[in-house]
Length: 264
Image 1 (cartoon, rainbow, N blue to C red):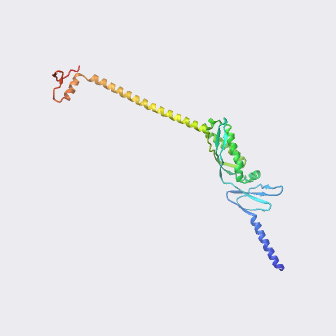
Image 2: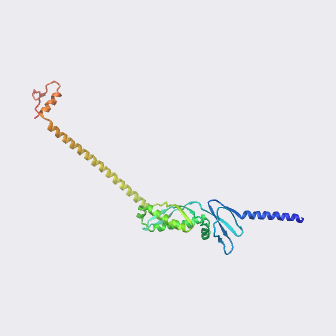
Image 3: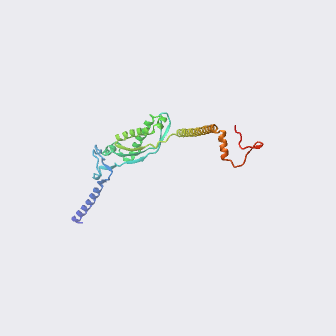
């Protein structure tokens, strides 16, 4: 093998090597993500002070690595857990939260937790969610929670939002999935049934009173009508009505035919 052939082969190998290194030294940050550059060795290892914007990023794969954090809104449905109210009642919470990483906070988040967003969601954010409910439940009695559920959930969401914001996250929405204890549900159902029955009885009484007043009015009207008839029903009037309705035959009153009957 002459020197020129060896030089060509060496050049070709170097070209292939540097091509592979170049391919491994470049990555693309997808839209809706922030890229962070992590130094793997040295006293200054960690996250750089700047967040990498979307686009193509060049780095040294031997001493550095690039992680991507999504900045779009994510929704996670946590497993249900139980929490005690101030008076000891046990409530079940099945929360769902929607959140996003605040722009520019990815390096700080990764520098603190050294985890990707999925691991942080399953551990850190879940713990913050549980704590937000636990703290608020400890301040409310069972009756207060039932009577002021919307106010209670608003306070939980505010507290959780403040906690997540300190960690670099923005809480977009939260639903508690709050479930009352079985005995509370039964008591509420019984109370509602009693109220409905009382309303039904009250309505029936109103109908009965209305019907009674109607009959009284009808009786009073009938009595007044009879009284007026008695006042106006004179012997002459009776005879006139008799003549108007007479069929031409002489009626028989007593033992002999009599045209008019004495009504006095």
